[in-house]
Image 1 (cartoon, one colour):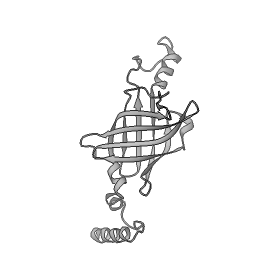
Image 2: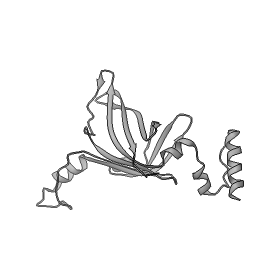
Image 3: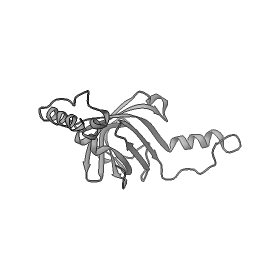
Image 4: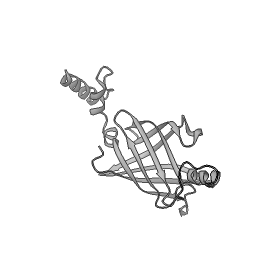
Length: 181
């Protein structure tokens, strides 16, 4: 029966149709579109670049050499975390007598994270993140879309942004973690 499902999916794809809705979820994920399948796994942040009309622009949020991971699973869930390379070291939880609010603010300002679902538009080579929850509560329910390029074990996100009123392009380069497929 599994082979029949696979055959129906291949025929549907060849004639430009959608994958059949009756196909088991495991079969649908296994034979998903190429970009979707290539994204599944864990990736390590290599660098973030921001460029404007006059060249490189200092990123107001991410520091040079920030570290991070992004994970895409085959069921359609994702998570991303990015941290500044030099963060204040203090014991958790931070309460009164340990610096309180200033230390919590420093921790908040040097870390970024959200999770949610994801989808790929094969025709435009764009991935969209549909935020379920974020370190920043206002991002809950947001949709973020970026152009993607996959070259071997390298994943590049490219997207427009605005910094200090200037239109810029933000590029994030990720490397697949070994064995993370």
